[in-house]
Image (cartoon, rainbow, N blue to C red; front, top):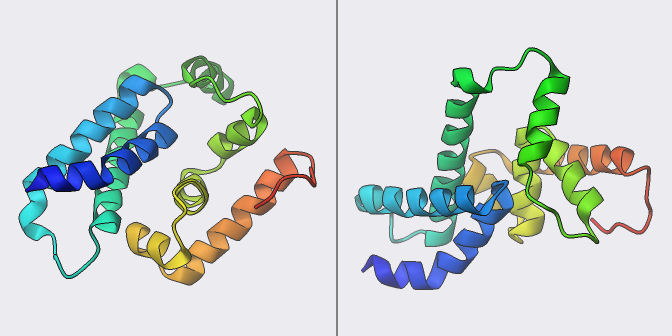
Length: 164
């Protein structure tokens, strides 16, 4: 039964995992962990609702849990922000050359803004879907997108050829 969902949504889910994670190995782990949780909690899925937002919410919550575990890990305790930035830059995945500045700017956004941007622009979700996945009112999603665009514009030196 779950095989049909994997065939239908697997590619999109893996794309989201690659967007969220810095490298392919982490994306593979997130992809697998997400499907394992889907299997574990499939009895909680309401078939009268769309499957993709439910799947995306599981993926994002799994990703956030991983971030919280990393933040609590003594291995990743940094004494200064510069030290943390240096380590994180070494771990970052290589970006596509044409949009490297944009991707770097998006990666620097606060997590709540970054997640909203990824879902809206990279996953092509509408405001209502992003709102449902993140469990936020649509006004909050719009506000976060507005703030993210403003920050990105500042970071990218007010480049006018970027389309949002």
